[in-house]
Length: 330
Length: 257
Image (cartoon, rainbow over all chains, first blue to last red; front, side):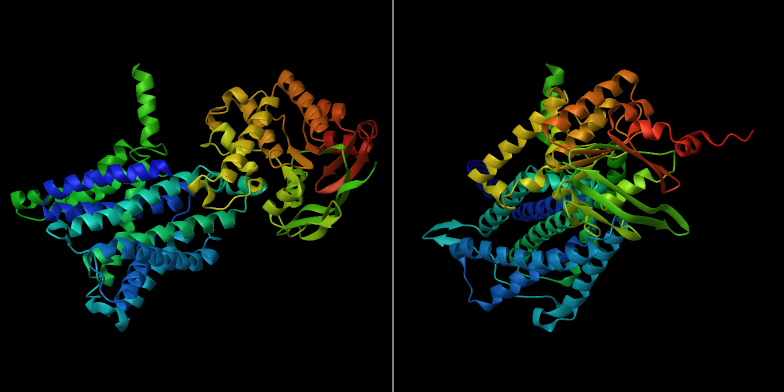
């Protein structure tokens, strides 16, 4: 457990630097990058490592977001430093709820292959969105207001900002998600996932319970999607079913495909690209006068897929590519 | 000595109007090396698919070690100790050679989903045992030096060998080899046969072999079952089969003159 902890501490130092150097809008974007990283990595477990095709990731994110948000409104406002304790717990509960939803959806539908699973998960995502839209207890179409979230933490003159607490929470789960998936994939369980992707019939003949492997990957993936939803809910303090539409599922798929199916570090890089690119293109709108942002963004995606058809890193991790490059040049 | 390990009782496989295999009865004794031969399209691979649970036989029963296994999933049958290789190689192409072998033993590694995350002692120990075992198996087939190769990049003959190693890694009592020497030259085939004999000894395996190379089948099999159009037309020792008019007819046709 030393490596994950040191990684987290190292990244927290970057957070402190970001606290003093970046303006609040960029800080908000940074949190969104972290959320998308979790979303991308978790979907990669299903789409990249296990070779199934899920199109309903936003649905699981919504389950995690709404469940943890609803639970947090049941308790009195815990502000400041208390958040450091309560938010991970709430995220965990949201994640578990999403994992349960993943189990319910996965068990019957993972017997289906390829395109069929995509349609089922797509349908599930829409069902969740429409259900939330019609649920007065969580605001329905008006949206869910007043979700407690990170606040500035006053330590007698020394203030730890809302951003830093939110960053710590999001980064904690990014690191957790990364190491959990990284290590599970390199175990017997993960090799079962990979064998399902490679050849389901051969995997079965070698004693791999392919249905169980698929359900496990799907449940673990949904769990982290729920976590991402919980972080989103508490940092924004407001939820709207519209945030969990089809587009968000597509964003998650783009992150996975762009980064490379089966490349965790690829998902990390692609999450940065997918979150920041539309924002970076904003000045272009003023320059041209019309909103050509999404056109240019889409062109960038098309260009990248032509240049790197297997995603930025293919199924390799960035470390492996660096090692290969070093060996080639020396 | 002649204890039946596997028994097929009136196995029939019907695809629509076609009876691919028709009321087939045969058995394999423990420790035996038996051949299953027949002309193209005789239904040999269909038999393998029924034995290993890929197909559900239309009627009939398969008994393995005294237990009926018809209707079990392929992975359950594999875990009971009946495994196979594939005629058209089905390796996990994008995985490394050793990973291919490790997948096959993965049900033997008993640790929870979260054990690798916390790198528990149990996990580390089981994992190193698995690697040790996989390396040993690869070593027998001379593939240890290529353990980190991507399995799809191996030469053809070595891919065939890797399929056998992978099947062995499941810890089988019986292994069904579907044309293991297909596409190999004479020397490679000879080499492979010696290997099969060796692993049979070392792992006290029972082997059921589908093969086209007659010389090979006649050379190493103790008993042979001959299929033609899904029906068993002959069985017995290589000598019996070789001199059977029915078998000659099936392979060479009838002399019209």
